[in-house]
Length: 295
Image (cartoon, rainbow, N blue to C red; front, side, top):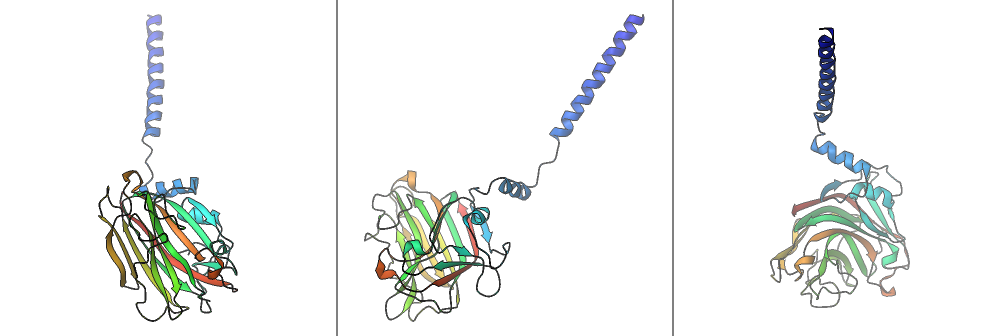
């Protein structure tokens, strides 16, 4: 009898221990998950090299009047896999508030400003909005690359036309014709007519010149095409005026059709001394919004 009771008691204790262990495991398994926004934030804290597809940067999270190196840009943008140029970036927008300023150093072209490329999550359509301003004493020189843009496939630039159908880029320039200064499109794509970026003969403003010390709002829209079809699209809107809005054939290789790069190119040129100036100059940026519309 005692032997039977002892066995029963031992069985009961083991069962209770197992039950308690099961309940403990269940309590761990049932730990509530982080809300989606908090989970994303937590993942960004673990790695500043995240590949993003939609975000906003106004630099208000940064100290005003400080250097803005690639390490901080990685935390804000994600994976900035290119960060090149002697100009560098600095957190100010010229109005005693926070934005970001890129310096153009004297007697240099693409090496005298900032060339930054950020990897994006693959998409078939993206849009970007940002504000840009030239310093009140800016030396226009001959012109140069300015602002944010997008890269597709092989991200063609630098006199490497997209004729092989493997890539392209959407960027902006400022240009000094001698009689006036304006923004113009600067695109590499399958059907571009010349070796260097296509401007489509478009400009903003359509007459007169850009003003120093004035903010301009830029909106870009880019859509991939499929196969050899001219069913991609590009749109550039500046201060509410449509500069370019048309269908386009970016690529003919479907393996290279996706938009996967954000460009931030600020430099004089061109790539020869005719674009140089002997002055130090500044271009300001603020209120950047990147949005992947479709993947």
